[in-house]
Image 1 (cartoon, rainbow, N blue to C red):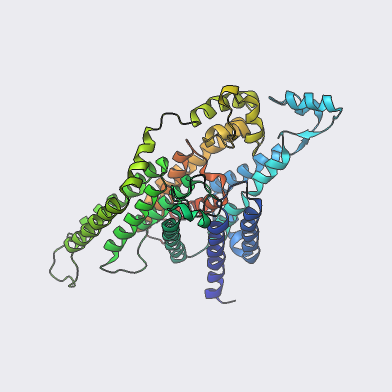
Image 2: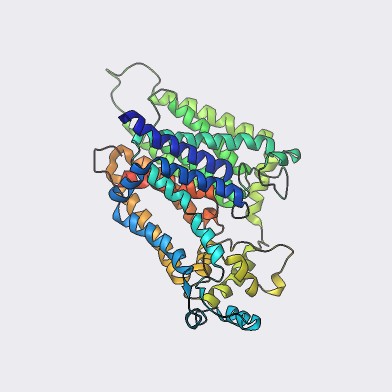
Length: 451
């Protein structure tokens, strides 16, 4: 196989995996067959690219490899069978011990109160690990190309919203919605996930280098950015709208730096669109786009803003009861993937509804319940690693913005996890791994070299 073909194989595998994750991975744990399709695609990609996968384990930062191994080791440790004298003494396992006694059953069982669910949670990590391993040795131009593909997927999501935003549009939602036509969901079951993926596409529009220089690059960036920003508003996701400020702020910072770089003497420069002309064109496009939004869908914009005034958010009751569940299993946790089962034991009667909570709507609390101190420590180490990589990415000169585009998405995930659970579906896991790939590749390159 020649060098070009060897480079293209990981590119094709990574493109296919991200596309499959986008199409089938947005439903969460309730859609096992769709998740299985994504995970099988990940395994197939690894089987087709053994050499790039091996290079990841030799060339990537040691801190990243160690943290990945620790993340895999935690759920594995939770499913190891233990003698009754050990597991019965674990915090919160007294209920399981009494159940065994009532049924006459005794013997070995695991740290996790439901090891099958913990193994299911472990299997979810196949997809992001495959993205990292396949893409690690891909050329920089391929990573940028895939980044622009993500922008294209954001546009596809927006176009799907055109149909979804009417009462008859429920037929185009993959997982159904409780209020047909009320908001844009794209290929997800959760509009917050839709908003954060659109935010990633917006970040890439603002920060990725253009495939080739052209006078129309800035106006096109602005037009695409406005379109994606409008789509985020139409999801009616409060966190999505707030977190959109991250890419918009970084885009403004990068644009300011670009404008300063253009302030050179005009003598000897090629004739064409000047920065002032481009800025005027961009401003006109912006005014037209915003005016069109307000004229055609003022009620939807108003509804999104009104959601910030919601005073009876049920999440605060879930958090209160989740605190008791975390205390019951502290400091070791009940096992990854077990929140829904153990939470119902500690859910207050006055907070009961016809629907179960399903999730803690705060991933840090949920991790505390499922993994205790080890899980919280791991989450903290991931945040420290991301901050460390983002700091080191500054040495990559122009390539730093590529890394920071990934870092911005990971920051948005960390912030949204305070009120939601973005990493609990295969799509966001896959694209989070791609964002980490952009950041880590940029951070590990020395000054003046391409990633």
